[in-house]
Image (cartoon, rainbow, N blue to C red; front, top):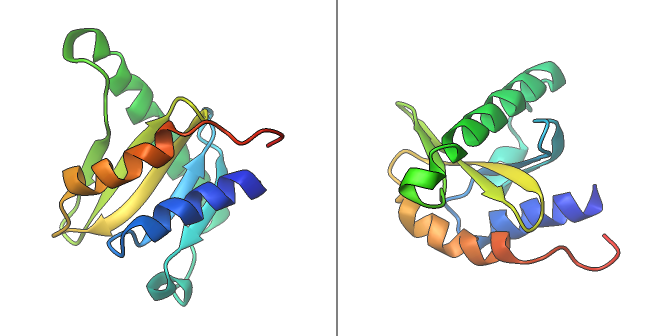
Length: 127
């Protein structure tokens, strides 16, 4: 849990556009959920809702990865809502999925380029 929370905090600190980061295992179970200072005072998502959303996120990422043989490796999936965006990413080196909320006006491609080095880092020994 410590390692996944520190991963979430590291991604959150990359750019102020990141509002929260959820780290999920390959089953869609939430391992860590970290919030920016702006979001710490907000009401947190309930555990049942968090688990359902995590399962949906991992299904979307796994389904999209099936097209990699035609299109090359997937960088991220972007869910664009009226008021916000959610980036879904996979770290093969760390064996986790990430969901990150960003503002609707944020440039996801630019943010991904900042996050990629963190996703590509191996787990630290002993974690």
